[in-house]
Image (cartoon, rainbow, N blue to C red; front, side, top):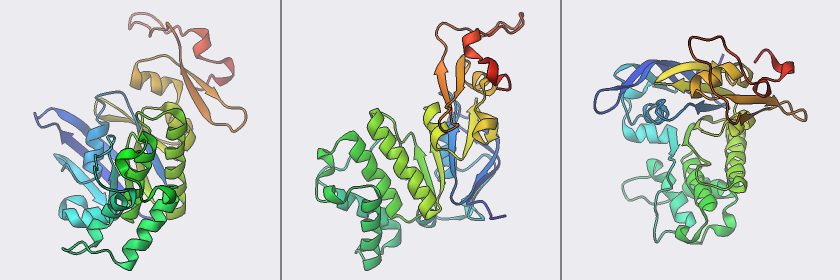
Length: 286
């Protein structure tokens, strides 16, 4: 079996104040695979991104990149292998789309940051892949939020890294632009055989685009695996402390999730009685 592109081995990490943020995390992502990380606020998702990108060294355990310990790699070497798209869109006043995407080539350039023919080719591929060729000369500040997010992804793709990490790529976007961003990521992961970790809050987007899912709560990994194994009624209720209807789309077999209005969880002293609309009879295995 192919070696994982990125791997966490019993990783524990702490917040600056010393409180545990992650504890005993073990999982890996391979080339051509999109792994979505889910969990409630405060579950440790942002800390996980920092560990995977090499920005935070674990207090215990080991993060490995392409078979090597991340702790033993310098920042420039990591940047050649890992591209990160943060949740917030970095401000780039005065720069055009093409100039911002070219910034993704910095880890491959010398001290004078002169673009080579290979740099130009990488930028052109990234612009084309994110449907930005017609906007390449436009100032980034003039673009819509969805277009700016595509620029951020194109910049990451221009790095030609083998690992892509995204923190809420669809955040603050309307549904059309969010779909466009998810489609770009899904296509690039498949075509370039990237190992991709994406943090999401949207359960439906996760079920639509993920190959595997990692479910976090309170810094611990509740489950990691296929959508059908992880995104079940019981596990999602345990993670989010919320009642969710888990349905199956008859057209493509994908799962979808709806909150159950007015539902409450059972108290510890009483047997579980779920509202009938939250557990379809035909899906008793959920």
